[in-house]
Length: 158
Image (cartoon, helix red, strand yellow):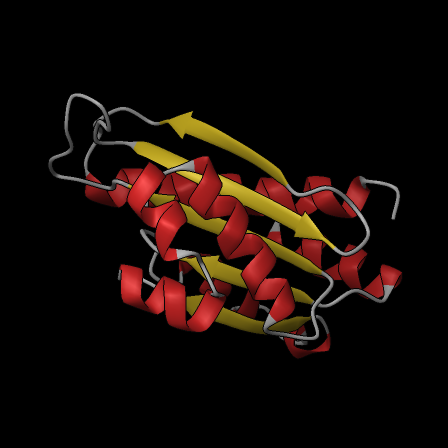
């Protein structure tokens, strides 16, 4: 997985990318925009750390947040779909999780939920359990996994 490869494939397919990030705080956007020429395919990034930001910027449903909590595949789905709806991008990845320290019995440190939305395709969601290697490591692993998902989304027939 490399950000360079993501950008090259997106450009070849004529796709724009958006990100919707919570626990990674913009790290996926930074990884993509670190590369010269990324403006050809990186459209925008949403850093929605609070529930209010998720609701206001990405149209995440308050009912979904209430029923499932911010760290859930349901919210990750709505974040990814919201990033597409609030931008001209055709591919979006969303990340919401518990980087730590802390967590709970039901939502442990290191749990990160992802959403991948692409125009004309069903939105995919998944949860990764990164354990408790520390906040910086959870965030780095979440960033890298989100980049892998973007690459998978570009490899899907579109």
